[in-house]
Image (cartoon, rainbow, N blue to C red; front, top):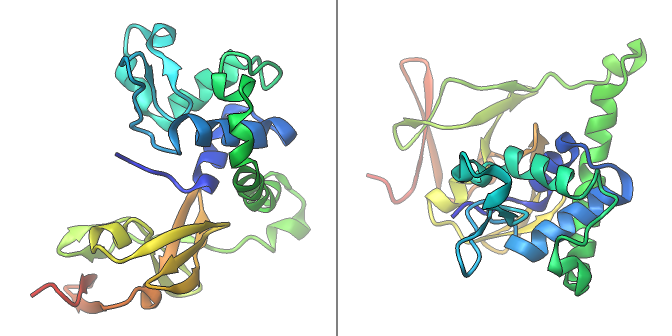
Amino acid sequence: MAYLPPNQVAHYAYDAGFRGNSLVTAVAIAGAESTFNTSAVNYNDTCLGLWQINKMHDEARPMALFSPNVNAKLAYSIADGGRNWYAWTTYTSGWYKKFWNVAENAAHSILPKVRMQQDHSSRSKTMVRAIKHHFGVLVNGSPFPSIVDRGVTYLLWTVLSKWNVPHKYLGNGKFSISGRTVQGLVHEGNTYLEWSTIPGIKVMKIDGAFTFTDSNTH
């Protein structure tokens, strides 16, 4: 199973075309339908993915519905660009409203970044942070998604699950890690955590690559 933070789901929904109130609605419905699980399957094995899209919408390659991008684009089409949500029972029943606050926070968290990307004025360009993907990072000996911002290395939040670190996503790129609130960095729809905020982490530089391990790794 792959559970995504709500802000990542909001990015997929935005990229598919959802805007404004329909963006919030889309994220709320994804929460109600799948609890943001990209691998979700309904009880009779007919609806898949974040928005529980029926296989009949992609009969040639139903497994593609587990892709957040594909699922979001089909949701946008089925919802008529965010104008008609009656294909989802979680909407007609009102169940999606239970996820509204989470969805609203997620949608708002991505909008400043989206606006900055779309603003091509010279003034806004000077504000863009030089965040880069870091290709010289290993976690437990294997390449791991990471970025560098202002000389600081950040690891993808899934490292917490990899090392069984107790955590909970709080929204807006924030995590509760072992009872302590940590603000992550949202980049390209993913949340990254500064390596030093992860408890029990060890770092070594071997042959030019940074190798991170947890304290239980020998």
